[in-house]
Length: 115
Figure 1 (cartoon, rainbow, N blue to C red):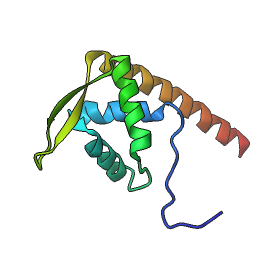
Figure 2 (tube, rainbow, N blue to C red; figure 1 turned 30 degrees about the vertical axis):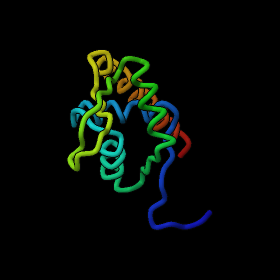
Figure 3 (cartoon, rainbow, N blue to C red; figure 1 turned 90 degrees about the vertical axis):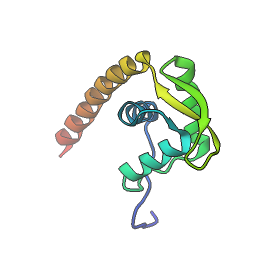
């Protein structure tokens, strides 16, 4: 296995939706680049999302009705789609957070059992 000072991590299926919803809930409306940058900062650069990963998630979340995108101008006057969490998205965030905590607790118990 190649050694790296910081090796990026891969997300489990479904966790990207959860962390995007959490980011929008915490930070308010953001465009995709802001979301990706924030997640990279929070993860101490362990999580690097490319457009091929993030954009399909944003489209999916918008189709679910969990986020809503509107066009606007960035700080440097470029057109970008800004995403905001909806009421349905806030509800889904609560449900997904609870589901994640149960799963993480289960995995932790299984790992402790193995020791």
